[in-house]
Image (tube, rainbow, N blue to C red):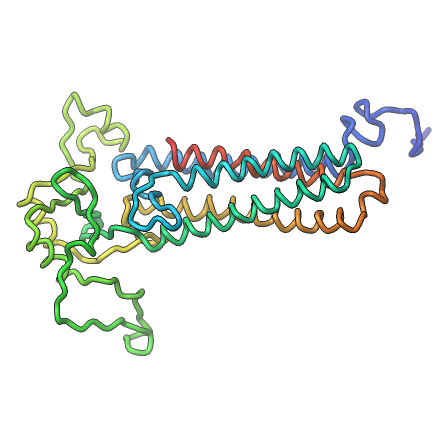
Length: 342
């Protein structure tokens, strides 16, 4: 049996690239493999988010009501402004990465150092901004009431604008004590106590006749509303977010079981609990990618400073990390669109 041996310097071409298929080095090819597999992972997450959103469209939070904060502008409603700013910073860091790669092709070390530093700075600002968004989302702004049946009661004025619990809740001389493991039976415990008790919210609501409650109400489907009913796969009933009358509001408030402040994996003052679960998981997963990219960029940055790639005669490592950075930026465009714009 004959055997064929191909030497490293053979003229034989594999996909026109010899030992470099498609004309790409082994390192760049492996980076592309990773990017494709990671893109499939993000696609699955975003698809799951999309299906869940349209299944629970009536209770899904409105981005304009959730992401209204801006640093050093406490109390000023700036919906989506800061999210737009951090998105611009991340996209601009992709531009500086392109400039760093181009400078590497021209073997201009000082320019590579400058543009790599700007890329790292942009990535660091984005990660910090994402952590700040998480903090505000977890802390919450308005507060709400969860009923015994699991419905969420949000407070609004007569114009339909959200009202925070702090603006109307009464202060009652009642001592509350958190149930901890050392005080409960069978090691029972409860999360940190909310700022206000149910009784204080109920008393404050009675003292402010201009307040109303916004919640999800189950309606019987009519021929005109069957399209909405199909969303929940039930042609007989469907839920819709609506503002109750004063009498209905007082009645629903008697069913209160828990004061919800902020969002976590169990409760969400803004609406559907799934929104908070997906928000933490998908933006956290993307944030981990950005943080990892910043760390890798820092390592490459110091190698550039030390002249490592100058001695090798190639800045291909900068190009490989640049591919990863562009992928992270592109993924955020889809995450930003799905979570904040649609």
